[in-house]
Image (cartoon, rainbow, N blue to C red; front, side):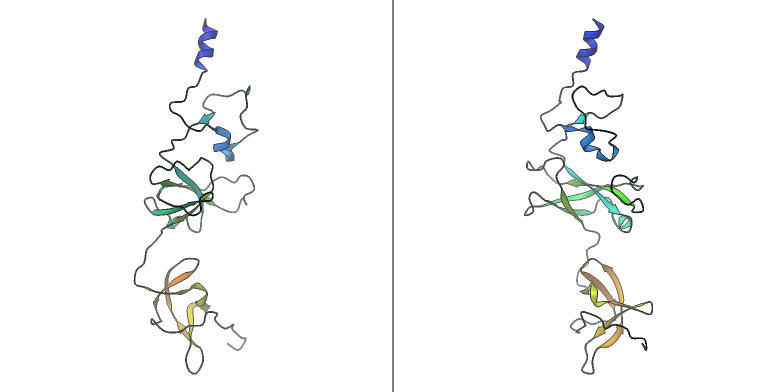
Length: 208
């Protein structure tokens, strides 16, 4: 009978063993109601559930617009899963979204973030879909360069400056900076290796 054939066609069989991930859980930002349950109606093209390939795992993160131009496909990345903080996984940037994510949930609509996909190298049985992870993307690698703690560099009249320790007291020195991260900044010129600088630049006074 036609009805029996239609019922038989509704049977979904997994192509391989794995963990079933409901569509509403994987696409939480597109959720328009409660998670899929037994007896729910579905429409054509709707993602009901998926079975991720455990041999091809990755991480999806959202990069702020202030940093997205520095992230490129092919860059190396280090991934640390919160459940296994002592294990550092290696991977590469696979794709950076060309457009920012639409505002949703609790995010400030003025904050623009871009979905970025990181592919994890190798297969790891302990990885499970939905795990939280920390990702560090290697933007640039510098060797044999002069660096100082980022708080050492101050803005003085629109220019970068450091304060060098001398017998007469700290002296302001204009510097040219390069790449930086949350901890260090690359000094291109203005300082020499071995010079001592103030970790906290002095505050400007009105006379200055």
